[in-house]
Image 1: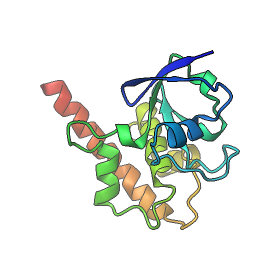
Image 2 (image 1 turned 120 degrees about the vertical axis):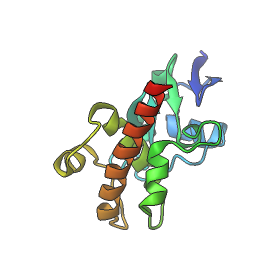
Image 3 (image 1 turned 90 degrees about the vertical axis):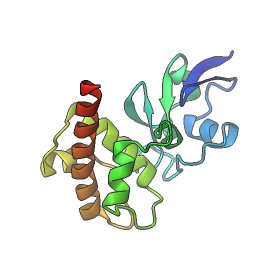
Image 4 (image 1 turned 90 degrees about the horizontal axis):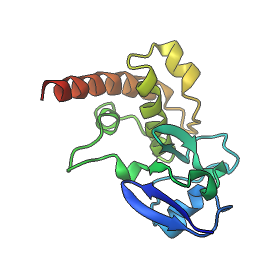
Length: 160
């Protein structure tokens, strides 16, 4: 059986329904920004957006995304413009080694979708991606800056 879905606005088809989405992205689509961390959905390094919701791709079989829209880190920038969360990460110098950061960025996008101005407590409760380097203080600054930039981008879009 073939499974059809979009990845970063591109229609794709997959044959192996039980293959984890992470491996389809990395091995079949050559989208290596999504990282393998634990393989059991605990660390969050593999987080992507599925229909706009942050999802751990290492435990998501391809068949479960049939008909869905998948967004990876490679699909965030549009027309040469970084996504506000990516821009915030640069401005606040969030990453240290950077391995977990694509998952952190995708999880932050999901957080800001429902909580546009999160408190520190909300960030700590809702972002449960693991950072081995312990850059949580910079991550907190990045989320706050991302909230500001996302709000500004939304307001600019409303005025246009």
